[in-house]
Amino acid sequence: MKILVLKGSPHIKGTSNTLVSEFIRGAKEKGHKIEEIDVAHALLHPCLGCDRCAINGTCIQKDDGNEILNKILSSDCLVFVTPVYYFGMSAQLKTLIDRFYAKNSAITNKHFKVIYIACAWNDDDMVMKALDAHLDILTSYLEMNEIGRILAKGAGYPSAIKPSYLKAAYELGENLEV
Ligand SMILES: Cc1cc2nc3c(=O)[nH]c(=O)nc-3n(C[C@H](O)[C@H](O)[C@H](O)COP(=O)(O)O)c2cc1C
Image (cartoon, rainbow, N blue to C red):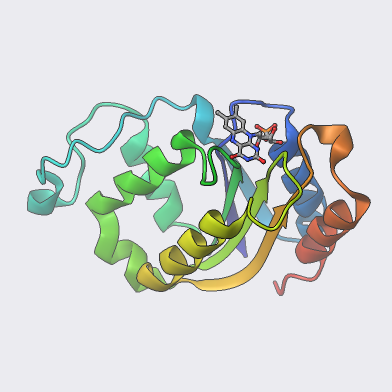
């Protein structure tokens, strides 16, 4: 399966990228083809809401957005990776998701397999609630088939990630059907 990992943290060696690297290790061992995009460091401007994409399906902005969207459309499975910022996903990842607007129908028609990986500092009942609900709605609206979600609480820096989350990420990759 062609898996595209969309990394939304500005910390290249940070917590969420550490966690997803375990997923990648497992998925590669299983024989999946993985491509990673560092969304947080891509040149990506926010959607302007100009609706010009409604004319020809291509965003008018001259940045990395259209190339990333094309890579998304040639994948089978999307992995969204984010730190928790104020109870939601990072602005870096959300900026990319807003740009889906230019290809909304093409994306929903693909019925992507989807995986979510997130890390937060706090370790309480509240910290993942809003993100969890947002991801449910996103999955449903974009007509994706979710195959995994790891929301790691109490994971404020890489060495704080609980071994159970690292194991779950590795096993998620290792058990993915080819
Ligand atoms: C702008 C900002 C907002 C944050 N908001 C939250 C939050 O709402 N809840 C929380 O538990 N941690 C919050 N954190 C902490 C990060 O989620 C946490 O340190 C995470 O491990 C960072 O992941 P990364 O290394 O992949 O970027 C925030 C950090 C930043 C920089």
